[in-house]
Image (cartoon, rainbow, N blue to C red; front, top):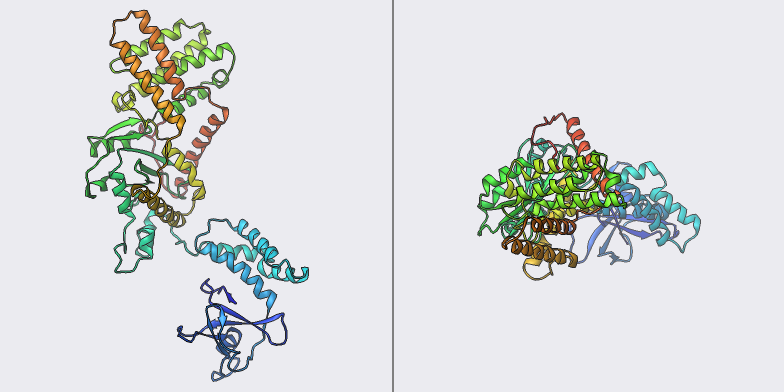
Length: 539
């Protein structure tokens, strides 16, 4: 029977029965290289006594030979001079070491869950023996809760380097974290040997991308970008990723694309409102048009409503609430204003608010929201072309990035130490990259858009075609007001400017709390971020 070794965590230990007592056994460890006749083993107990000089150095050790996990001899050469082990103790150790080995090679399980699994293994594997014997095995496996917890934690952290800062990552002994997963196990003659994942590193910033990821990104027609605070490593302010619509979604250094073979095919890049990153992108990619995510505009509107204390009115089903919602829906749709009709549309919204039958205080609140919308979004510092989505047929949000970051809780614990986070990054990136390449080569079908998404895109296209046909015709002012009002109402409904559930507002509050926690983590590391106009929240 092959068992797990405590020293190297692999199945390098063999067991043999005691000749006179079935409750006792001997442990055997490897000695020497494997030969055609089998692998040589020596008694672990006898070796320990001789190494401790309890017997003369010349005392021969009991030896046996095995192929695989089967003995190929009739018994040991030379007699044992050690005390045999209790079989229950050995079996209990093995149940714990099995779980330790799984944690050491990458099982994504916390220590408490692993301890429960040891108990389950004991019950399942030793159901047919007496309760007394089973309890002995269980006590050896995890009876000492504190010691078991420490042993499992050591196994879990065995494959992680103790790296906590970007300065520490720069050390040469951390080179295993600079390369891709396949490079870590590649032979020196392999083309993947020393394949870099980390492309840039200084005291404040690290950028990661594999060569295949850069090739995939360069072939993407549309890219989106987004950051996450919740799943950032401890002491790191934010993890910011760029996603391409070829297949994979990875953090990529855009300045590296110029050195990547092939023609750049990116034509559109979607952002949330982060002026610094957008301006830097536009300087380097002057032929790519940048667009504002309409989902973030909607989120910003919801937060504005919340800050003004209008949530109850916005979620009301009464007539006054419905009228309030209808006007907000039309304001939110101004991102789809026809070309050269933005200012006239703003005046139209002001007219609709003033002519509504809502109470004066509500109309004033709506005018305040309209002023906020016009100042912050329509007349943003980057330009009206960035904000307008009238000429964008599909991919108007960065929701793919948002949903990706939401799924990161499956792979990353919140605010892990940097070393652990980077190992997870290598593994997750490799799996995503393999999937993306399979899709590109036709070996795996790509994800298809939801039917409802395609239906919404088609409906928006029809509404835009109809409004352009109307604007090209001869019309009266009253017709303009009625037609544009109806257009904005329909577009606002299609892009989601409807009554949100309270849960959505609570999630937005939670996201703001995560940002505060990230900032607190930075402060603990002695880094202070000075607020400036680019850090202020328009969304």
